Image (cartoon, rainbow, N blue to C red):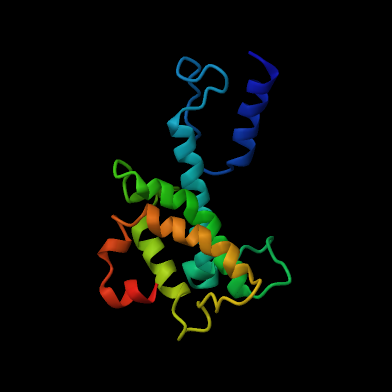
Length: 172
């Protein structure tokens, strides 16, 4: 075993502190790291679970605020940024029709389609100042995040966006 592989194994166990056991390493399928799809699914599930917990603390998946990720920007911008960062892997997951819409972690089921739909609906609702991501202005952070949001919508167009009623789709 090379030092990189051993270090990677220790890293995985240290960064995933939870009751859910880590998948076993398989050096036949993945000779360098031992990681399989199950490892990536475990990480994705753990990150999604963390996002959901932050969204619950904040009151909305459009405003998932992490306590150690505070900057001098308004909460609306931080909420948009956390949405954009998490929903890129979520969008890629939902973009593959073979992947289930519901994942489980720590005994909890999370419906990714509902989570994404709720975050988009609340983040773009200009009538709710608590969840609204705000208007795009010259040189605003919204411009940077808009590309990620657009990519997520495109990746999930068949599973999420196409199921929305026209008023919601037009607004978005």
